[in-house]
Image (tube, rainbow, N blue to C red; front, side, top):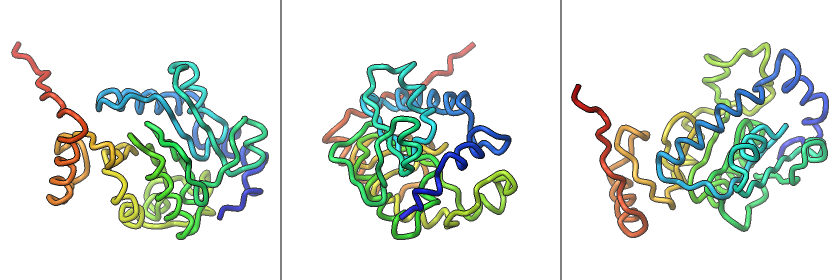
Length: 225
């Protein structure tokens, strides 16, 4: 269970306003546009979005501006952030939504949960997602090789990428660039669009797809010049 009081006004001032801020509104806007475009490319119609750990609400702001018809539920574990930005107070490690969503956003949340909390959160995310999950979680490798430790909140639970993949695998297929497709959606992926899939899982996905969704047409966009 996260320390809710840790994510107070001072936390947001440092990580979202000062020189150590993690993301700006324009950056998240470009990310949201990319995720939305990829969803359309894969044939996923985004009608309802759940955001876990919504923080300053940059994702929600983009959807309200560019996809105003989308139903958007923003949640956070921080009482301060919920009061300031208008989210519902929810802890994804203990809360499972009663309805499902076409897109679930979980950016920078899981690393703050202990192993039990993170595992439970992944199960709740899996149950809530009927389409795509956008997931960002800092791993042990990221701390060593990717992030700037002087500007990053490193008071996290540093786990391996394999730890996350093992728990995500029953629920999702990794597409790439932070996107995961819900297995229940049976979204048809070309072989090189996603992470390698065991042949048994590929057969199961093919069987589910034949009962729920038409195959995607072949794409041959290159024309002779």
